[in-house]
View 1: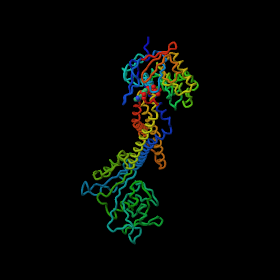
View 2: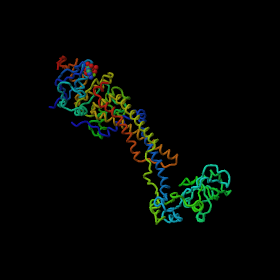
View 3: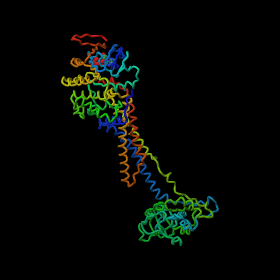
View 4: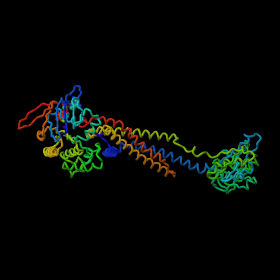
Length: 402
Length: 236
Ligand SMILES: Nc1ncnc2c1ncn2[C@@H]1O[C@H](COP(=O)(O)OP(=O)(O)OP(=O)(O)O)[C@@H](O)[C@H]1O
Ligand SMILES: [Mg+2]
């Protein structure tokens, strides 16, 4: 005699029938799983969305930026400045370079104040002075509020001109260029040619008075050892190659005087689920899942008790103990999977809504979408273990007596 | 000569106490193929106990039970389950229909565990329902059926897997006289077609249907022979 069988399709349809028998109860039971899985998908989706946002910014800007540092004095204590006078031109000759320029923060003598009038108190907050060749200003991709940047000519002839950032302008009380304002650094006047509203790189320029490199050298002398840097804006994908070539292009005699800082590797930037808040939400998702599991376990146990007679009948019709367990496991698993599916949809919708509201591109990893219903299924099956075990222990004789 | 459907050799069942209950004392009984046996006795006398043993729902604590010539005591649990599903049909006093499923789906349930191909099941369920005279109520839920109709669905479910033995525990216990008569007539027709039937009943009219009558009193099984109007009792 062949043992009794339960075809998987029969198991599935029995489980579905059991679940649909009381649709409202099933829906309420699945709610915990819906919340748990939904939170899980939403958290992972939002994390992926924001980090891809960071990646996008990174690709556009950081990946096209190389910084060169003057380390001549570290290599040789008698060395002069590492960047030659024609540094901009030398670098801009390299393929893939868009703009390049030398800059350094100007160290003013103690007591020197920056103000917008020749006399008067030097009150207000201090303002930085930066020496920069025109290439720096262009590499920073500025948005001008008023006026224009100083040009090559101003640099070559060491004109007393300045471009100021909007933050610095506010501190100095300069609101318009129509009055042809000047900035006094100590008692040295500089004509303001432009006010920068915003930059994409080197945001510290916004708080500075920026003067041509040559003018700074004429008035305050060469930069201190190691103070000067070079900012290079490159084409996409060229940065690493340029970082490699730049020291030699600048100083064929002493390439070791220049240290190139290439953009960081994008892969190290990609942020995982690292934030405290993300972890808190994942914990919350776990708690929801646990509550969901308890709910499913409870409902399934109640169903087992309610359906004792049915279990007895099935045993009389040839069902083995394992068929009875399998049926209740399948029912609780189906409930969990259903909750998981609905939760996945709701979580994805949440991610899309947030992304649309923030004008981001929504990103949900396929692995997340695939894993979420499985998590629901596993939750349901685990929750069904005890009720299924109880169901399989029901004696048909006792069950049929009812 | 085929083996008898049921052969009890000193079969007994004592429920372990405390105190132990001798629900069925050692008894001999042979039910041949095509027999129609009615089992009578007062409440608590051990009728259901007898039926549960015969239906492999309970194992005897003593004696040998041969079903279709197979010694049940030598079988493993899984084999007994399979035998129960394939060789025995049950009809209960309280019908035991699933309320959320139609008559047809209730009948289908009897074919889920027996390895009957899915493609065949629907046709067989319909045939069984037609056989019990419910061809027109195939898709009705049990809640919309009368008591007699429900019991006929239950009989269709018991028949559909083509068992060798039909065991009925008070099949008319919940039915009025008219419905009871319909169910009885059906059982008799099935017996005429060759089905072996054992019916537990309180109802003398039902008992009179049987070709043989077995009485149980305080767990003691006796067979009553009705011959030439004279009733003789013989202790088994
Ligand atoms: N699980 C059990 N444990 C102990 N005693 C039991 C158990 N099941 C039944 N009994 C006892 O065994 C005896 C026979 O019970 P059974 O159910 O066979 O009676 P019955 O003839 O079917 O009665 P009724 O006509 O009321 O259905 C009764 O005395 C009952 O109390
Ligand atoms: Mg009884």
